[in-house]
Each structure stands twice: as C-alpha cells, then as structure tokens.
Image (cartoon, rainbow, N blue to C red; front, side):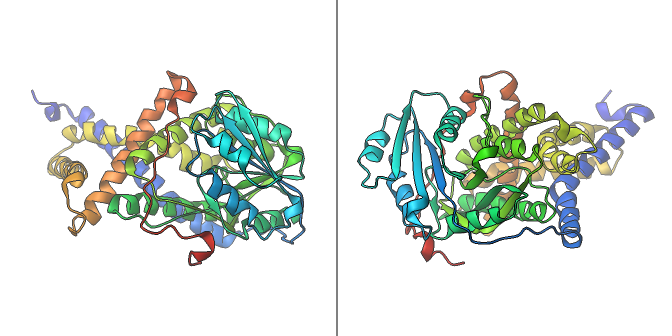
Length: 399
C-alpha cells in the first residue's frame, strides 16, 4: 500500500501538519515582518539625542586581520570626533599573519596592541572591555571601515540616560555577481526588520561590526559565547536600559559569497540557541521582547523542520493537493539546485539565485544544531569577501 493511501485519520493529520508548517513559514518570513512594520508606525518610541563628546575606547578583537587592520585604523582615527577623546585597543587573538607587527608600528600613540594567545572572540572582547577606561566602549570588527561621522552619531545617542547600547548600520556594497547581490538583499531585509524593532524599543541585539556601550554597564561574557553583539546588549537590557539603532552611524563592508554567508549563519543561529539558554526570560510571555524573539529568532530555527514536515506530509495529502504540493516543491528545489549552472546574464538567475540563497540559509539553521555536539569555537569560520572593482572610501558612498 502506498503511503498516501492511508486512512482518513492519517490524511487529516497530514493536512493539519502541512497547513501548520506552511503557515509557520509564511508567518516568519512575511507575516511577522509586516505586522511589526504596522505596529512600529502606531507606537514609535524615540530617544533624546545631543552631541556631547565623551571619551571613547574602541575595542577591535582580531585574529589574522593584517589585510584590513591599517585601513580600519585609518577610518577610525580620521573621524570627525575629537581626537583627544579616542583610544583604540586592538586585541589580537593569537594572530600569526603580521597583524601584531602592523599595529605595533602604526604611527599613532592612541593605538595600543593587546596580544593574547588564541582564546576566541569572546575572550578578546572581555579583555578589551576590562582594559577600556573611557566613558563609552565602541566594539567593532577589523574589516569594516567607519564613516567619518559614525563615532559622533553613536555618542550623540547616549544623551538619553535610558540608552545603554547604541548600534549603527552596516552598509553592504554592491557585489559583482548575483550571488553577492542576493546575500546583500537578505541583509537589507534584515535591516528593515531591525529598524522597525528599534522604533518600538524591542531590539534583539546589535550589529557586531559597529556598536557602543556605556562602560559601567559592560559585563564579561562566557568564553564560548558566539554572539557577543547579542549577549552584551541583552545584559544591558536586563539592567533596565535600552538598545538603540542609529542608522546614521554607518560602517561599510564588502559583499560576501553565499558559502561565507552559510557559515556565518550557522554560527549566528547556533548563537541563538546559546542566548535563549542564557536569557530564558526571553520566552516568558510577560517579557516585551518575547513575541519578537520567538517570531524572528526562534522562528528562523524552526524553518528547516517546517520544510521537512511539508515535504513528508505532501505524500499523504488528498488529490489534487498532493500533486500540486509535490510538483511545486520539486520545481522549487530543482531551480535552487540549478542556480550554479545558470549564467549571470540569464533572466532566470533572478529566480534561481533567490531560491538557492533561501535554501542555503535555511540549511544553515539546521546545521546550527551542531552547537549541542561541538565546542562553540569550532563553528567560527573565516569570512571571505571578494573585492569589488573599486572600493570607495566611506565618504564616497552615496547616502
């Protein structure tokens, strides 16, 4: 007997699971973001801003960042922020590619090198926070250049005493391929959600490449932490302060390949498991972030299971729904699988590229389960980027 010839109870269960899983996917990808956008229009919560220069300690955790470190330091120290208020701490996590030597030779006394044995990013960030003595700590990665006015915009938001963390906007430059374009498109979708969360004071973390925190609020994190840009902000939120997203404070990055984005998503989705266990009150309905954490973060972790459920239950659906469901999924996955073989100039690439990107990122959510079997540091992979034909300086990028 074929599976779809089962009794009515089996068929009804299959229909229920199919509909529920389909509804979950639609809600996570489209329903929740749209409802969030509508709510953000109805109940925005602004912050008070004023440019009051404060001392800044900029912490850059880095491992083998020789390719980027000088450009990074230049972009920070060429800022319009008062130079006497800036101190840069480069925390080298066991670098072996000449990063330490480049920082040690950098011709500016405001730059200090802290060389550590390999211990992971969280350990490097903890050490940087420990040594920072300024009123505000700015945390950033090595690759992304800062806009000239980024530090000033970050500092201005701390005029509001309720703001404990300020995060900026990461601008991804246009890629040379459809694959890089699609990963950039995904990032723009994420930023749209983030901006709406910000309007209702429900931010779920910061952008790791550009965020700042009041020194007195910064606590150390566990050494195996994968998402410092979520753990640190949430530790501040737990003290009654706000995370604020200022899209005028900008850092600029190069596009990444889908392969690199896959490994980045494996790490970030694994980090969601970590954060959920570290801050279990996120799942408490009385927490104002509960709906958003479950809808946006936990929902993403459930997508691969929903897709598998749809695929399996399709064989027990009644006709003609069974035929439509199986055929539709076959076309969907075939188009995604064929994307590698579709020429960049082929109009079909616009469809296959998006589908492949979706499938790869959902697969990353499934692979994030490795956090329960492997040491967290094994999930870190180097992010590789492809340089565009022209890499503009931040002040050359159209605003």
